[in-house]
Length: 306
Image 1 (tube, one colour):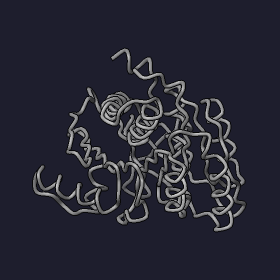
Image 2 (tube, rainbow, N blue to C red; image 1 turned 180 degrees about the horizontal axis):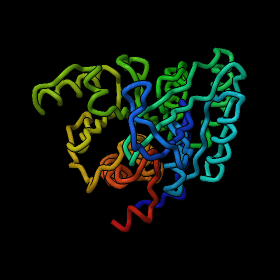
Image 3 (cartoon, rainbow, N blue to C red; image 1 turned 180 degrees about the vertical axis):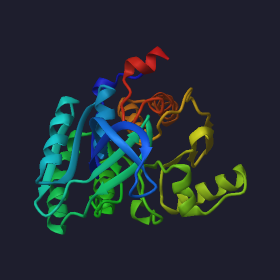
Image 4 (cartoon, one colour; image 1 turned 45 degrees about the vertical axis):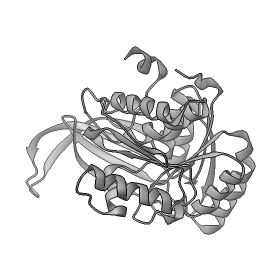
């Protein structure tokens, strides 16, 4: 296992607060054909780019998080939780923005409903964040751009260009069907369904390889890593394709698994691991985290134990 304590990772992207309401379902509402959840407890966890950052910190890396939040109570909760997780935060406040919240209602450990509260940040705040980004770059080995489509990475192409010019490794967790804005990144980590939105449906492994390699060349990427759920992961590089089978023993909840994958990749690459070894370790970490409920982290001790 690489020495992760020398790794320095900067995470930039859309943060959110994941709220969970747990309860029992014993009847159907007389008002509509929907279950009535008697809420008995609640939990809060950092989500989105915040979950990437806490995963990196859990693996022993020095990690900083740069993002935009509202001037509200959820932002304060996020800041407090991330500090407790060992993440250095640089959260720009936008008074007109409401910090993104994803509220999940669960009955008997099954998600019944998700309610989202969100809007997009102002351009002037995005520019302020970019200036902070320029100042922070020199301190870190790897930059992770975690795009959840909430507007915090509207200037992503400038961020990639600045980081690459500074000689940094740039990993991107992409969103949407237009990947041209990520041109020049070191590595993209779409999941299977996200890749399908961009390259279309493939017929077999050979067709997938052809489509993925074409995308990698068109976007001038060093590599493309596709996470494929029960099929494991596939790494596409100029010198060929490598596949790693799944390591999940039990799948309980896949939410946040992509965060764990890109965080582990970043930490291992910043620690000096090869891309292949970093992929294998991130696949191992993903196999552990999907056995946990909700957005969660994996520690080095857990990885070594298995």
